[in-house]
Amino acid sequence: VPVVQVPVTARVRDSWLVGNVLMLINTSDKVLTGVKVAARNPGANANLSVNVGQIQPGETREIGTLDWGWVVEKGETVTVSADGFPLPIVFSAEQLNVK
Image 1 (cartoon, rainbow, N blue to C red):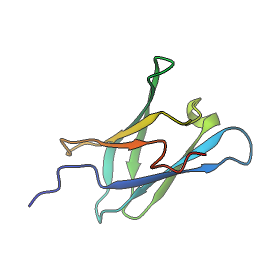
Image 2 (image 1 turned 120 degrees about the vertical axis):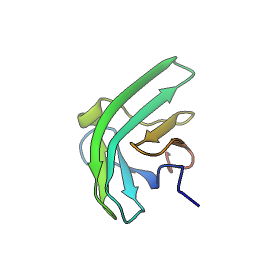
Image 3 (image 1 turned 135 degrees about the vertical axis):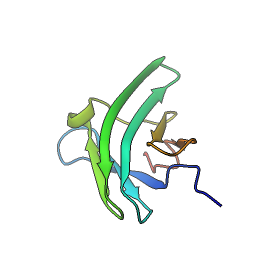
């Protein structure tokens, strides 16, 4: 059975500087290419998308507030897509451990 959903897990940790840091972990044994992250805040009608590029097998990629200009907050969603995977994976702020 082919994998159709992007093989990543994610969580958020506090930043040492400003906001928080989104941590993306490639759980596969393959390089992920064309990785994109989209954040959405439906209450504020705001969204932002950023190109992450490649993530190596087992690599944790961190994207901080200073990197992409977004603080993940309660009620938001983060969607991760990548080349070769027809289904993106969506995380709620609660799944990401946003406090």
